[in-house]
Amino acid sequence: MYLNEHLNTLPRGITGFWKMGQSGIPRTDKSLIKKVIDVFKSDSNFWNVKFVEQQADNNFYLILISDNNGNHKIGINSTYPIYCGIKSLEDWETVEFCDLPEYITKMFPIEFTELRTDFLNEPLKSKHITALKKAELEQIKYWKTEKVGNVIFNKYD
Image 1: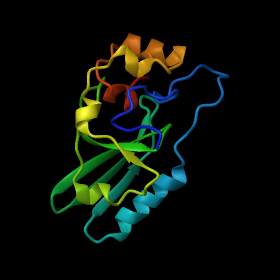
Image 2: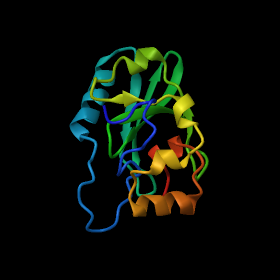
Image 3: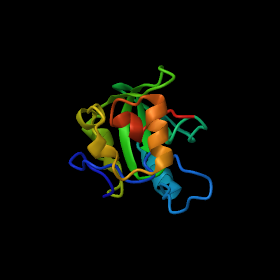
Image 4: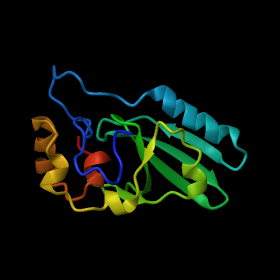
């Protein structure tokens, strides 16, 4: 997988930011996301399954689902097939994270990697960003990003 909780260096392009003309930035395969959505839609334990495209002011897709335990938000990074639970998007600058129930994470194909809150809430350190390009580092500095998760799932505009 591209990224896991034991990887200290975030891969280039993870922020979704790059300079015009820069090549080589990967994209999460949208057919994989469609596969996830279809799995949830075909399971009678879930309803109100909705997909929200990446917006101009963030670097992730959203899947919204409801079940007997409530509503869940799932963020999927636009560059790498990694996902997390999202507790809140209320803050205009940052994302709050939560761990998804295991019955939800089991439904994701093996091509996806789940990131948990203990990793996402780690303080951002220089070791995490050594592989990032200048445009990404500039955004991190400008937005004063403090947590690893808010680099991976950001609301930079």
